[in-house]
Image (cartoon, rainbow, N blue to C red; front, side, top):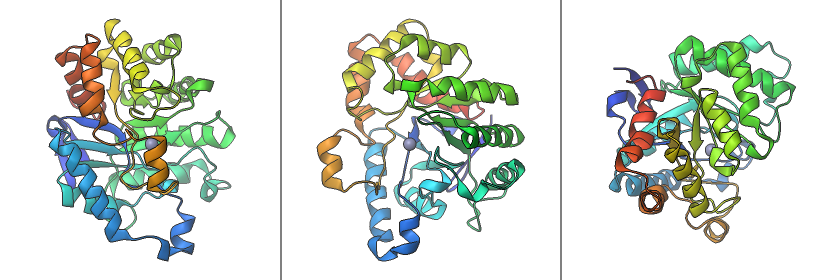
Length: 311
Ligand SMILES: [Zn+2]
């Protein structure tokens, strides 16, 4: 048995249960919080997160992995308040997004690795909350600074034993670039999830990711572009048919609080983009396509526990 850190303390991987591998309690743009704090209502954000996390829990979800990086507004104490209020087990991330992390621009790579390691082993800032996973991202393509981020992420993951879960831009097959860097660093690829793979309809790309040893994160369920829920379900069913259920995870990349748009715009553009869509819609679509309950348990329970070091 292995232990994983959550916002509210360590748990056994055997107790993770139905796990959504890529979600967010809040995604925003941090400069706004410092410059215009009056625009944000923290208690309201916690309340909205609690309500949405509870809705997912009512459908059987027990754990979410919050993959918000440092530079998209990760807030460990806000996440912990939402976890405590709802009862959801929430794994918190460290790591940075694909945009240039200026803090590290002219600092040695070791500083980036050391900060990630500190978040994981000691806790984030003064919160005492330890990160349990590293997030990194590559879009639209890998550039020099991004490659430094990927290498620092791999080094911190190997030092601490936590997995890496990524954001990719599948149109440019950036998951394969990430795999190459992780392999060069010596990362155990079975502890990596190449995210947003369900934005691709290219079976050869997806099979290359799987054959490279990673999991395919099918983690944009409910976002109607570039692919519908039916198209995403078709592709997952085809991979399961080929025997790859043990290489797939499911999630929505949803945000309990999303500051890049107002709620009206989100509801118009992506009405199904919520923490409950896999339970209410995707799993039935998979069943219609011949995916068994054992396969579904593999993707939603067993694979997440393994990625976090369980059996
Ligand atoms: Zn995300």
